[in-house]
Image (cartoon, rainbow, N blue to C red; front, side):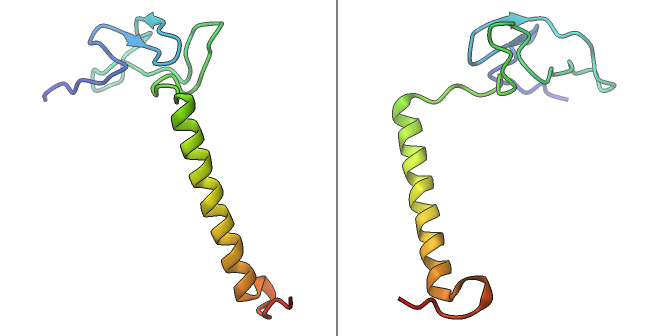
Length: 91
C-alpha cells in the first residue's frame, strides 16, 4: 500500500500547521498508521484545527463576506415565500 504524503505528517511525526510545533505519534492504529491526536499538544496552541493552516486576514474577510451574502439571500427568499406559515409577507 503506497504511503500518502500529508502536509501535517512528515513520515516520522506530526506538525501543527498553526503554531509549527512538531511531535512524534503516541501510538499506532491496527493498520500500522500513526494515531492522529485530537488537538495540538502545545500548551500555548492546543488547537483542534492543527491540520489546517490559519486563514490570512484577506482570506478571512472574503470568506465572511461570502457567508453574509449567502445568509442575506436566504433570508430574502424566505421572506418572499412567506416564511414558515406559508403566507406572503405583507409590506
